[in-house]
Length: 144
Ligand code: RB5
Image 1 (cartoon, rainbow, N blue to C red):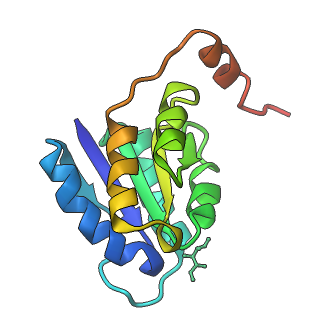
Image 2: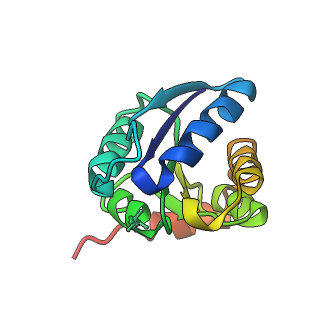
Image 3: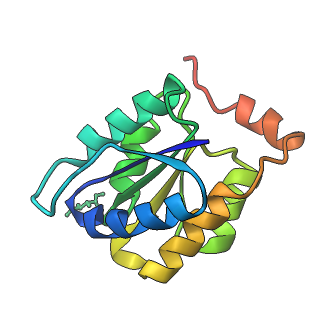
């Protein structure tokens, strides 16, 4: 199982801390940057991660920015990306169980390191429930 991870400058420090925790859980990791706290534009990193999930180079993604919202907005512009914002463990589990989120987005400025590690663990170790949730996901794409 390969996990892609990306952040802007606001999420950089937490991204670095999460990388070790994700590796400890036994996942292979691909880091799409950013690589410092220098100011960058979150869409550049969101799009790189989204493309990698989309073409199945990685199975799942983790994204971080200050509030999580910019990353989520950019990621969800990609047709096959379902990026869910997770600020606590139960939400992290639900974005997998109910929404089959293929990217988990964390608000780096609003979660502690410990919370973030628990959120990522819950997200990566939970499975999609399918059934009625699949029918709902099927209605998400807009064709008009
Ligand atoms: C960067 O200051 C901040 O705007 C960004 O990380 C994010 O929160 C945007 O949604």
